[in-house]
Length: 427
Ligand code: GDP
Ligand code: IMO
Ligand code: MG
Figure 1 (cartoon, rainbow, N blue to C red):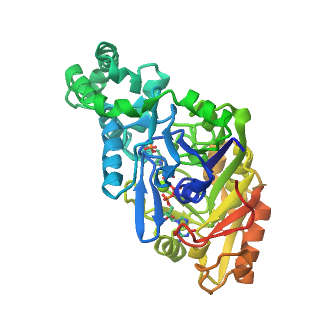
Figure 2: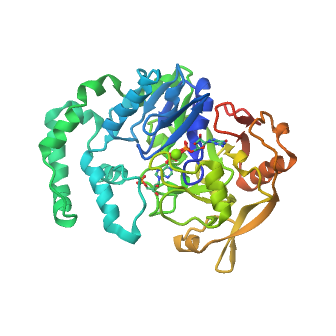
Figure 3: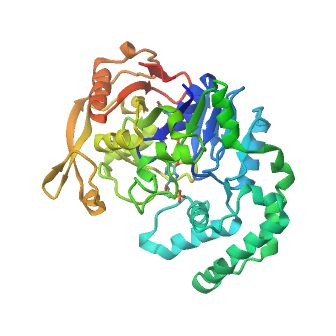
């Protein structure tokens, strides 16, 4: 099995980090292929808890090579903060590889991200403010700065000059901020060159050779299908391709090498930031999920919006990503509920929709059609086989599987590495 993809099947924070960590010992390379430090993955190993933003979760597995692919946007300051934080806790980061073609997030794009949000007012996206959108916009606009540019002062200066011509007009004339000088940007980026150099590689060649040698490569998405710039709830999305298709472009691994696509899906739904969310709860049930599930963002600390499981979203994700296996996480969070509603379809202005409405306005008007499933009260956090789960928890998994368009191969019953029920091996 040469390449395997892990994607978020909802609006993020499904537990991709834990799933990647779970597979870490079976794979040789873990590649982050999209996004940047807008991601936040919490991985719990024994008593230790790690919060990763920019580094692939595979960094926690000894012997696994972590790779930051060409599709990622890199805040170099954050990269070294994260490396230093892990090294201080005894994690070896020396094997990290960073694509020479990945784009870097210059300071001015962080400023632009925040002022643009303020400018949008009630139309804001609720971004993480990390400069992600402006940096991807520069990339598409052919005004981006890439990792390789940092090693050539002349080229770097030219590119920064080019980018700032327009940015400074925006900053001063539209947003009433101070202009940025070419020198300060260039100096800041150059200051990282010596430390960054040993990590930089032609990662597409490296990964191709690894696959030719029979190694297994895991491609780990940040964000999720419903936040994908093409397939998500546009414009309330992130600015990258967070779906399985993005794994090929964001890593340089050919699509024909990808044999399995693992969709990570929570046993309920959460969302951070603005945008439509049909099954969102505004009552005590929402508070229950937020408290039981610890639904507060790893990156910004914002309380996550919570709602019931949405099988229209899951089916859509199965289709868009070609999901071969789902990992259903956080089933333990539902323990104690008498009944558990699951959304099976939407009612849009009196018309039943089993599939994701193509029109965004319809999605905004979607009212969930629920099926009520019986709950359970037993603690399931110690379950290690499917048979260990109470009958109603098993029935919940089976019904959700039936509705979601792919088999559920693993069920998460707690945050710990070992807290999972494996029904079918993923690799
Ligand atoms: P990611 O961004 O997709 O990697 O997910 P996050 O790390 O942002 O959010 C998932 C949270 O759920 C983390 O705090 C995990 O430790 C936790 N988690 C993952 N799987 C499970 C599970 O099966 N049960 C419980 N209770 N927590 C889980
Ligand atoms: P992980 O990888 C949840 C959301 C933001 C905002 C929108 C755009 O941990 O699942 P951006 O800063 O990317 O321009 O913000 O996307 N968002 C996430 N929500 N999990 C994430 O990552 C997210 N990354 C971005 O809240 O609504
Ligand atoms: Mg997260």
